[in-house]
Image (cartoon, rainbow, N blue to C red):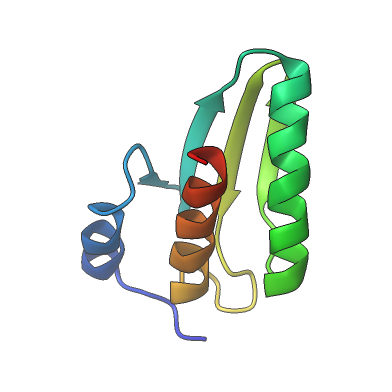
Length: 94
């Protein structure tokens, strides 16, 4: 999988509300009603990550979840990350 250049990443992020490029990763923070809701969404995301064989860097504190994506093998952001971000958006918003 080929690493995307900054212009391509920024163009892709136009379709991903709230996601931004920081330190070679795309990232977004989510806030949920409570810990149970945050953990439930994390579990649903985890199953999808396993299916895609692509795993995020994430941090959960109570009802807050921050997700950071890049493709370690490529040394940066790839289409694989954009696709997973879209999947995460679908999970969170449904």
